[in-house]
Image 1 (cartoon, rainbow, N blue to C red):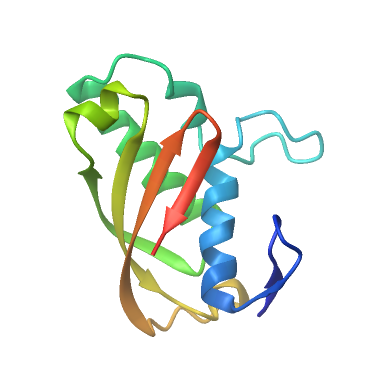
Image 2 (cartoon, rainbow, N blue to C red):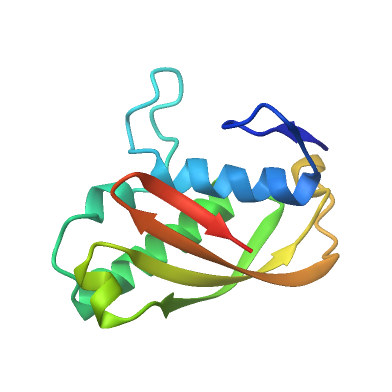
Length: 131
């Protein structure tokens, strides 16, 4: 499955399209889509709060759950924090995701092709995935 890059309009391969999908899921506020109110990650509502251990644990759980629900091409294995204290103080929270990549997951075939890792950074402008 190929998709279209939402920023440039170029054609994306299946993996890059799944990464873009994760960015959209995690940056969408719950209830903000008129035709699909339950879509989103619930993560955007947490941004701007003081980072504490319970808040970060909730952040990890929301991210893993929303990816498992809305992006069938990825199955989350682990989420770990990224970045320094200074980056977090500056408002840039990062996480590293280790996921099973299932390229035909959206078709019901959950065969794992490979395990991949990528970083997500949450900033005031949204979510950015970095491979």
